[in-house]
Amino acid sequence: MKFRDPGAVVPGWPRPTEGTWTEHYCDLGTEPISFEDSVSAEFYELEREAIFKRAWLNVGRIEDLPRRGSYFTKEISIARASVVVARGLDDEIRAFHNICRHRGNKLVWDEEPRAETAGFCRQFMCKYHGWRYDLEGALVFIQQEEEFFGVNKDEYGLAPVHCEVWNGFVFVNLDAEPRQTLREFLGPMVTALDGYPFGALTERYDFVADNNSNWKLFADAFQEYYHVPALHPQQIPSAVRSPEMAIECAHFQLDGPHRLVTTGGQRRWDLPPEYMYPIERTTRSGLVGPWETPDLGPLPSGLNPGGVEPWGITNLQIFPNLEILVYGGWYLLYRYWPTSPATHRFEASLGFHPARTARERIEHEVAAVVFKEFALQDAGTLGGTQAALQTGVVDRFPLNDQEILVRHFHKVVGEWVGTYRAHRSEARA
Amino acid sequence: MSALLPTEFSELEAFAPTWCLATETERFERRQASSMAELQRFYDAFSPRLDEAIEYCNRHPLDDMPEEVERLLQLVYSLVMIAMAVEIFAQPKTVDAADAVIRRVREPRP
Image (cartoon, rainbow over all chains, first blue to last red; front, side, top):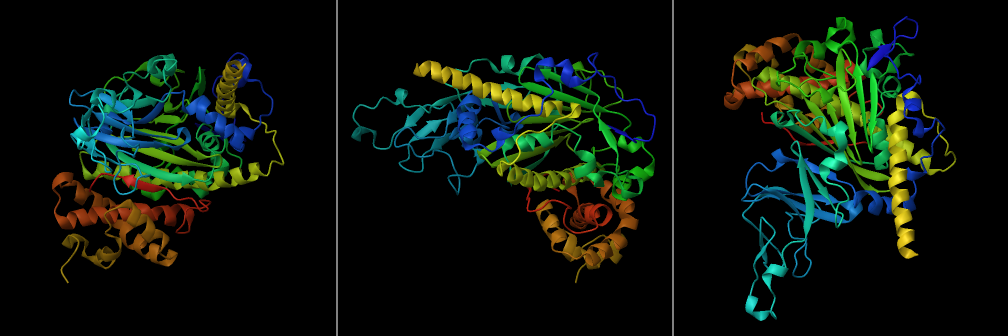
């Protein structure tokens, strides 16, 4: 992003010929929008079916399944689903509904049936009556099989969930028959990052939070930078902080239900030293990660579709609930899992190349610590947004051009829900 | 009592039992439970030698660190953690975090 001192004559980033990004994507409109979609229990019920049982959902990375027999479970509360994802003996990654075909017990769990788990095994054994399934989902053992009445094991394999992998990201789709393949769903803007070496960035720092806000409101805070000077003033040391600091992103792009924003401008570490905190100067890392960018080889041009120079961050918003932020040589990933109209589970991951030295490990640690500090500010504040919106007093909110992705997100959510409603009423008629 | 840290950093021994913590969760909680005066004392004592401590740790491979060096590395992580309070927020707790909690559930060791 570019920080502009309102008093200084600094040219902004070029905008489309229409003058604004929002008018460039003309079907977005420029009217104030409603956030009823983030407080209504009825809307939440519609999102269950219209979005979370239709869209491809990212549940992890292939590094989370490092070898044959590795598995993890994923609770998708809004879809009322629990999914087991496993790497088979043939190295294929498959997903199944986490339910035993005998009496419906939850098949894979550790100490607490509602908590997610991960591990390594050759077979899944039900804790209830000992039925066993292999990593391909086939039922391979029935306790006292002779007591049953002609149960054919071939008919009682685990219920499969559609599962596909894009560039190491494992996605599932809970629809009976997905309307699009994963690649079709992701579209050209996202798959332009096909060659990005996420698989080399395996030093992970994972975070989980249960936040008091609708999943979309929280995603909104991470798809615009307009809030940064007000909510995160401490990102700039107080000695050089200006209360009227303006912020402008370099490039916005929309593709189907997905969004992208790129920031650019002078890199933090190239600014005068007073623009950094002492801990950043000593560790040579901080708010935007390590100053030293590892050589990851050639990077796909899709990483910077706006050709922004100097490039800062590419922030990809993959519908519905995944965000990938690519920094110089590392990435941050967020997932927003709805748990009720007013709450969601937030997952975040930072991925770096494996530290070769203590200094590199410390650089990564600094980035992970700073990330959490500022995410806590978002999490704290968005609880207040949720509470205020729930009063229902105001429901017309103006968005500026820097907030174009917020406008697009709520519009797409509305469209998916609208399509589902239309099909449902057709089916009833 | 035997030394926890390399002898070159013996003047920091007093902080070692409190701040040599293996996980971010422990470091974050210790920061929240400390007073600004305590954080400032640790910061003032260690930050002038931070660069030296990083260089010292850097001389050892991450996957084969002597225990006292690993503890020094943990002390560096703790300094990073409390620098957020001392340099940025001027309080142990993140400003405007309200009741939010974010748990780190996976991290490399050390």
